[in-house]
Image (cartoon, rainbow, N blue to C red; front, side, top):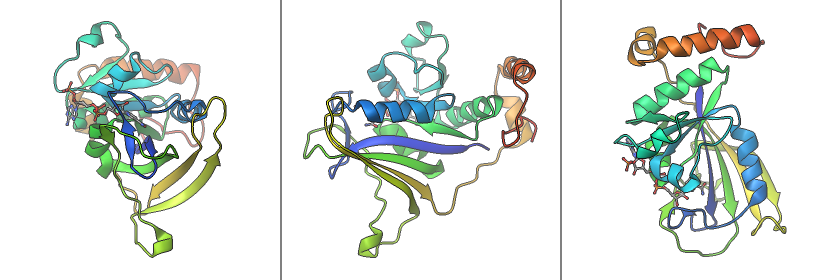
Length: 224
Ligand SMILES: NC(=O)c1ccc[n+]([C@@H]2O[C@H](COP(=O)([O-])OP(=O)(O)OC[C@H]3O[C@@H](n4cnc5c(N)ncnc54)[C@H](OP(=O)(O)O)[C@@H]3O)[C@@H](O)[C@H]2O)c1
């Protein structure tokens, strides 16, 4: 199955990610990086995070987790509602395969990062150097400090520092972590074919897309 990644910005060192259902900072460059990374992919988010954004993220399949059907679905027909994490993963798998993507993104907030943490193989963390701030949402995953001899399930694949600018309120650092032993998810064909009510529609979309843009080498084929 496609691999699950997550992407988060948190305060350093307190690990705050939100206050009153919004972001505690404005970092234009980080938002641009987020956009570049997630464009064309499926994204999974919690109902509260969707409400804080207020509209579907363009050029992405937006999968919203909520235990009850959100009222805003009527206003945004492109949204996909998942009532539980399993359905969210299934929708993300199908959408990723249909569009030939090897990964999808879990984009928050606090509750949703925790729910999907066991499935995540790559995490992009933005550490925001904003000092101590108050907040009501956190991302507390600890990656360990290799310099202090701490063992970690995660390895740093890349790290980049960004300065404070006119459009970036604070300096920040973006680190890409990979899970040392990637978690591989499997699904049976029956599960795939049997559980999604609009599977035929998705298959039709896939066939149309295939005619328009044939599969390139390295992309996932639906029937692989
Ligand atoms: N800094 C960042 O990178 C970043 C990224 C994203 C969000 N945020 C911040 O994080 C905060 C929001 O986080 P949050 O934890 O309060 O909310 P959230 O994770 O966005 O959404 C929580 C909602 O998701 C649904 N949900 C949770 N677990 C579920 C499950 N197992 N099955 C079905 N539905 C489930 C529930 O919706 P229902 O109540 O409708 O059932 C729950 O109320 C905001 O401040 C936002 O700005 C920060």
